[in-house]
Length: 417
Image (cartoon, rainbow, N blue to C red; front, side, top):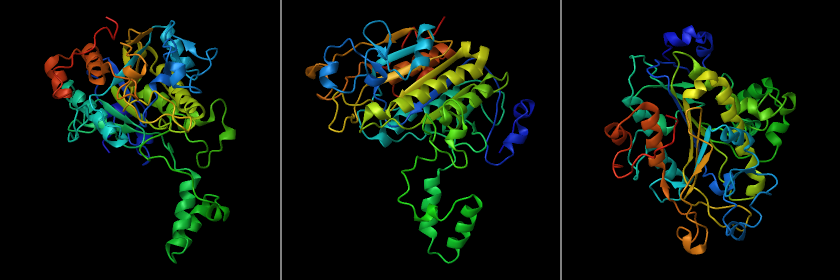
């Protein structure tokens, strides 16, 4: 690991040498900050930003529209989900812009393909670098080996991979596997004469008892490179009942956002960061499952703002997902993979307090393939518009960041002058 002098100046040298934390801080060629939050699993845009003014919404989604008394109104036609109270505060302050009925240029409904395309910024599978890494390559730097980009959390998302060097940061002990994984490992190796006893002794030293090995099947595990925005329910060795407020925040997106915000706020810290959050694939019981991830996202962006302090005024945070969900409720009180969704742009640099959309309508004949919210905006146009305004990039640079997109003009009017 390369530890730059900036990390030392920030008093982080001892943390960075602990082995479980990876950190590289870099030059600061610009005062502008840009953060991308990737929502893996496909956020239902019509649940996050409810188009309650469309008369067909209730017909298509019985049981999926939150009570009007609970949502946060955005001016008559749209409202924010009840879990997005802090987003509403940002909206009222002119620091949150919602862009609705938006999608990438691809039309796959495969999570894996769509996430790759979302993060590489192209229409076809095959690109091996991410568009955020290509952005970094377009910005000036002073040669620091850490670059100006930062992967937040465990693992580096595809959007940050490429030729330009980037750093990575996760707090010590962050995103530990839960007890179910340890239990599965113990049971899988219980019959091995060498590994079985060794693993049992190791787990015993962590205060696991025999019940760990004889319990039922372990719960489904999250990808090690991602996190649920609300955090794991019971991290190993850290019972939720010991924590105040929102217990899981200490181990989920809100804590990580606060830590990374402090790094971004430093005078010589990184300027670009990416998070990836899971928990958005709501095929079943969406009304019960979605408030948790939405609330974690809401608190995480608020924590990022608080940590950035005055630097928030020069920050833009882009929240995007691979595709939306079906316009109609399915048979298990959820929604299936769709097309258009909503994206959020937050920050002190954002010209917010608006929902930007060309609303396509929800009548059957207006739905894409008679099932999805139809897209009327391209995610590349949104990203191009932010990058052009935030970093002063012209058509040539934007063309290198988003290849074969010359026909997609940058959205205007996204950031403050």
